[in-house]
Image 1 (cartoon, one colour):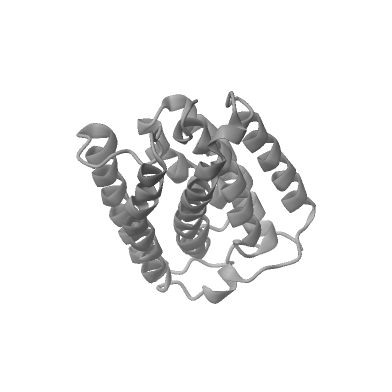
Image 2: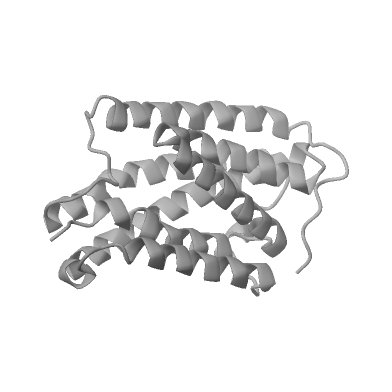
Length: 223
């Protein structure tokens, strides 16, 4: 499937929604990081767990974040682009297969560092749930709502990909600058994939696989 072109003329109605989404998600991100990594009022969900109950508790803790991220679609409704197609699967192209292989390699390299992965097999279901929730939340916001609105006001597809990747990487800077750099590169790949496929299916799958490694490495207990 060929890459989707940006609109020939800017959609003036998308500007307020785009700015509103940036403010909304910026406040959500700052508030959540302050409550978790800043003050520690809420445990950081992707840190090491000591018990299976604690692992599933992290999943429950993350559910409100997903709901807040899904609310980003309300801003995207200001765009005249149909949102329902975002969650329809499309036939994968060559870029989807390359991204999938890269995602599998990354996840395997991260999980392969665990000294005894078999001993923590019971923790893999909550890790899968947490990775799926994070993938759904971030793809809905960045490659979903944000990119839809960007395509309404920015003509160049390359600029759309770079801008959404920058916004995606920004909150990761407060985790670590290196993480932000990796997030920017990953965001560029996912943005290009989103444009080429026309929906979020391949992005969701690749993001889920990457998160199994990126979240699993600090999350899984050590024997």
